[in-house]
Amino acid sequence: MQIERVSPREGNKSDFPIRIIGRGFAPAEHLELTLAAVPAKILEVDPYGTSILVGFPDLPTGGFRSIAIQTRNKKTGESVQRRHGFKYVENSAI
Image (cartoon, rainbow, N blue to C red):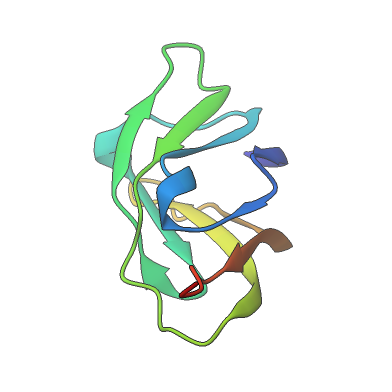
């Protein structure tokens, strides 16, 4: 498994779902995914194992943060992480 990039690279709750691009991703039922160590819902894994569509997790508030993305194959135990994979910017009140 490999995480190559995340689209978009930064945003807030309204920018979700986000897409994780890479290779070797297992089917959704075999994956666990976290953003900043918070479980995130996997909405879809493409049939070629090259992208994961991820829903918004319950991230703690606090403004700007760089988020590590980790995915783990529950069946094989293989794990991959991308540090600073997404920049979360909390919605600000205007």
